Image (cartoon, one colour):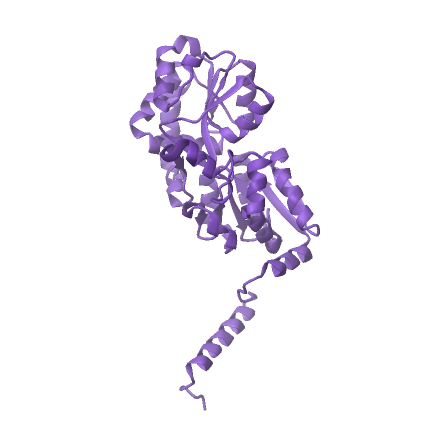
Amino acid sequence: MMNTFLPASRRRFGKLLVATCVAAAFGAAPALAQTPSELAAAAAKEGKLVIYGVTDNEQANHLIREFRAQYPAVQVEYSNMSTTELYNRFISESAAGASADVTWSSAMDLQVKLVNDGYAQPHKSAETAKLPEWANWKNEAFGTTYEPVGFVYNKRLVPAADVPQSHADFVRLLSAQADKYKGKVTTYDPEKSGVGFMLVTQDKQVNGAGFNDLLKAFGGVAVRVQGATGTMMERIASGENLIGYNLNAAYALTRARKDPSLGIVLPKDYTLVLSRVMFIAKGARHPNAAKLWVDFVLSKKGQEIIANKADLYAIRSDVEGETTASGLKKQLGDALRPVPIGTGLLTYLDQAKRLDFIKQWNGAVKAK
């Protein structure tokens, strides 16, 4: 006969035992907290990690080399691709049964959509304590960088008096000197670039009053659109284009160190800040190696590599220097507008809203 008056401690134990048996019956192990050493040991047994990212190989390799030095038993397979390619490839491969263990992309909205659609698994990392609240969404999507977006220009060909210091300055420049800058301004193609679409829709939300003026100014100078940051940098450096809009300052800074003709301005009215979002795939074949990688990238050591070697701007509050969140806050203060990770990023991924936005964009800015 079953005793229904068990002590509380025994009742709790009974519930735990039942839950464990149920989990085992369905092939799922009960969730157990892993110490760093246990996680490293489990990752070593897996022996491999597959990452899909949009970060250039040269920059990503700074992190990968240090990770391999710390965890030599884990081989890392890194594939660099565009934001839209990563999104489409991950979905198609996941449907077929397997894809990357980790995705890492600056197209924050596309990453959030994947997480929202159930493609991620949670990971409670101790390192998230040093992240801004907006950079950790449900312990599934993690912001790893703090990258400002601004104007990049050719210092040899753009007079100092023309260099815009705000979005309003930029619109005034293009409106007043449309003939001079016709065909000489470049930005992302929102139809081809995932990060470009995300940034320009953020512009619309942050700068509602001035957004139509911006589109009109783009149309007036027959703005040139590109799908890749590298292409825009090349054309600005060569003088084919003179000013780039919404370019990632992290990439521009790296290029400017080798090419002194490139100038960078972070707008004083507002500077959008994007963060490369990382998540662990729900169907990851190497989940422990994936968790170990996330912890490493978010650790102080990983963030110092991001700031001092990869030039991608560290997001952790306890990392100091020019290419860090703390350094940017000292420089720009309240002008910084970091894009929070969450469902707010899904607004313009709604098919009807996306089509309406692209129609508005094309109607205003496409060269006639």
